[in-house]
Length: 182
Ligand code: 5GP
Image 1 (cartoon, helix red, strand yellow):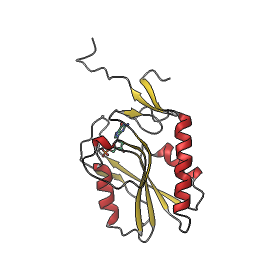
Image 2 (cartoon, protein in one colour):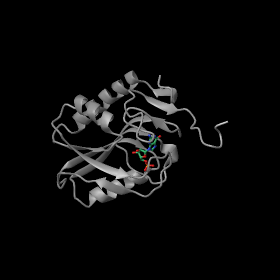
Image 3 (cartoon, protein in one colour):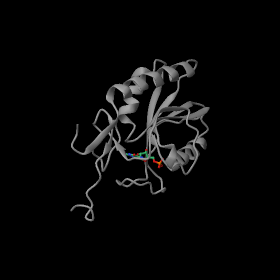
Image 4 (cartoon, protein in one colour):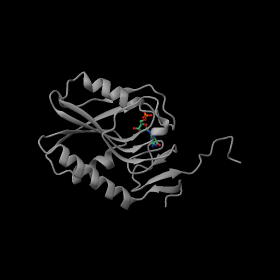
């Protein structure tokens, strides 16, 4: 295990199995249409890549990059779009693919923003759900795992841009601040 990780919360095998199930569910629900899966950068990259492979219906992908955490571990609630979609979503069936919904502030902002572009449908697929931390309610259609209020990394999720490559979801060891270094 990586030295920065205290414990594995969700193993590689458990992730892969659940993502397969989600892909099957999505394939069934969207069988009569050609959805666009929108990956929320950067955290959703591993999840999106695996989800695409387990989704058998034709679909396109696009990306959005919101910013709110500024490299730390707490949500600021201030959302900006650092990268916007390449294609119009007007009249399309849109599935937002997110790594984690925590306070829900980022997702609320994205839903409000995307609704103004008049998609035919707009749904959320999140790998992780920290619903105990919710400040803004968002309708989640597909959920991989419900997790407790702990800061997690791996499988796309970072701390200060690191650990996205880990194949599992792990809880980090307590951070060494000036106060608790000794
Ligand atoms: P929200 O706006 O729902 O509070 O936060 C959404 C974003 O915050 C996620 O897309 C993710 O980038 C980041 N985030 C929330 N909780 C965690 C966490 O436990 N670990 C990591 N690495 N990022 C998180």
